[in-house]
Length: 420
Image (cartoon, rainbow, N blue to C red; front, side, top):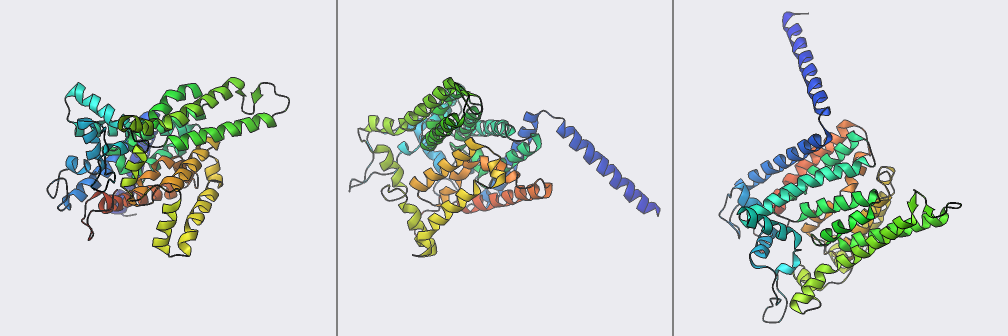
C-alpha cells in the first residue's frame, strides 16, 4: 500500500472513530437535551427557509419587499392576534351594507393572545414579539411532551425519531410564527398524555385551556366519549372481576373519565357561548368562521364541492368517500395500531371533525398538525435509518414548498393569495 493510500485509510479511520465518539456522546445526553437539540435544529432549518423566501418577497399588504425575518413571520393571522391584544373582541359584529358579517376577531380563540398580552404587560415587549416568544416556547414544550407521550408506546430511539418527524413536518414551520398552533399542540399533547396515563382528573384543567386555544374541543370530547364506551365494553367483557375493568381501571376511574368527557363537551362550547354573550347573536362565532369560506356552514358539503372542482362530477362525488375509507384503513395498519387505542381514536375523531366542518383549502395542510400521533406510526413502518432519514429530508424539502407557495405573498389574478 502506498504512503498516500495509508494516509487516506488512516484519515478515514480517524473520521469514523470521531463520528462514533460524537454519536456516543450525543446518546449519553439526557432525553430532554436530545429532544431539544432536534427541535432547535428543525426550527433553525425553517428559519433559514423563511429568510431565503423573504429575500424574494415582493409587494404585499403588510411591509415593503424583502422584509427581515421578524417582519416576514408576523403576517397573515399573526396580525389578527395582535389586533385582539390591542382592541379585544367586538361587541357588535361588523357587517357590510347588505348585512353580511365581515371578518373579525371572534374567529381567533383567546388563550394565545391573552398569554401574549400578559407577557407584554410584564416585560414591555411589543405584542408581535410577545406572540412570537409564546409560540416558540410552546412549540419547544410540545416537542418535549410529544416525546414523553411516544415513550409510553415505544423505546427511546423510535420516540426520538417520532419527534424528528413531528418537528420537520412540512407545515411545522408554523410552530415558530405567531400562530396559536404551537400552544394548542402543547396543550393537546399534555391532555393526550394524561389520558393515556389515565390521570383524568388532572386532565380537566388542561382540556379547558385546550378548548380556549383552538377549535379542537369537539373532536377531543368525541374521543373521550368513545374511550369511555370502549372501557365500559371492556368492563362487561371482564368476567369474575368485581369493580374493575380490563387494564385495572376502577369504577372511580370510569367516573373520572365520564367527568372529563363532560368537561370537554362543555368547554368545546365555551368560546361560541362567549361570542353569543358578548354580541347578543347566537350564531356570532359560526357566522364569523364562515366569512373566510364565503358561504354558510353546511356539514360535509364543502368536501364534495371541492372534489367536484378538482376531479369532475363523477369522481369528485366519490373522492370524499375514498379519502375517508383510505384514512380508516390506515388506522388499522400494524404500525399505526401500535400507537394505542387512545391516540388512534383521537386521529379518527379529529379527521372526522375536519370532514364534517372544514372547508378544504390551502389552510387544510396546517390543520393536519394535530394528527401528530401518526408520526410515530410512520416511524414504526421501518426500523431502517435510511428510511427515517429520507422522510426527514423529504419533510424539510416540502417545507420549502409550503413557505414559498403559501406563506410568501403573491398576488393572484383575481386578488388576494392562497392562505397558509
